[in-house]
Image (cartoon, rainbow, N blue to C red):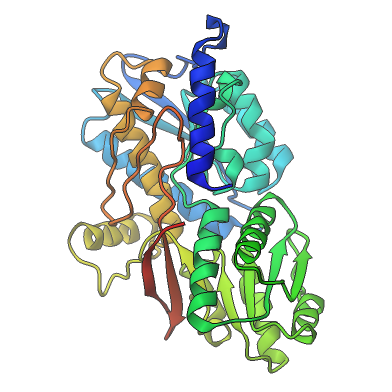
Length: 399
């Protein structure tokens, strides 16, 4: 379903909703706000299979929190960030969310990590009236909401959605390189299903049949069967609904078989660790992406300063994930500031839905929400690994 059509549907539903009794009011918590602080929670994978995402995201969030507080906080209140480890396990994400709500009394959940983990825990947040802001998954359930269920208004996302970004990147690659036999290898969970949906929807629109569809269980490390199947099916383009090690694993396996095929990764593959760890195996990989990845030797101005400060704080180079974590907190601070000195849950919700634009320092597309649209934007880039770095191939792709 196109975004404009679904937005129209939501707008119509919103009109219908205004005719319903006042029972349909969204309940938003005022917990976590005192005269001196705002308590914000997050759950990240700090110890499991995608800790290569979770650790730098948490670092970026901490860095932003320190900057916000050093500048006097938000309308005089300091931000207290409470980080829990989910280990990328849905059960642990549920327990972490319960702890953050009941014990830490959080005002909002900002930047929680992962499709299966966020999905498992989000209803607990909504029942408690806690906002779920800018999760580290671009799955549709993180921004599409049913106006007849007022608690679903508590979710907002500023990440590029997997379905739309996959469609935009795949369409561009198919038209550019004239591929005839596209395939997909995807993770067997909510994230992978979104990438698969994008793949299927785009091929249907282009009247192209997939040459092969294969999946793997989350946490798998052997992709020989999947790659052998795609090779025997004669694929000329492989879409990867993978994350870090699975991207490298699949491309390494293809090299082993002497299979020279073009790989296109969904947006989670567009991180520095892929070329840094995959080296020659991942040279030539294309990926859908949200923003250009900055490198310290070529960055300028505020971005250069940010990269230097991150390295000083965490003794490691900043990456895409750190930027996303940093932006999540900075976006929260922007809308909390706009909500005013007498901050409440309702005023925060109104601020988020006001149409005010947040612009980051990294030249990302602007973040903007409305009463009917809780997704910031769908502008996509395509980048490629060249000489061990991500290089911009095409920007401003719209779906």
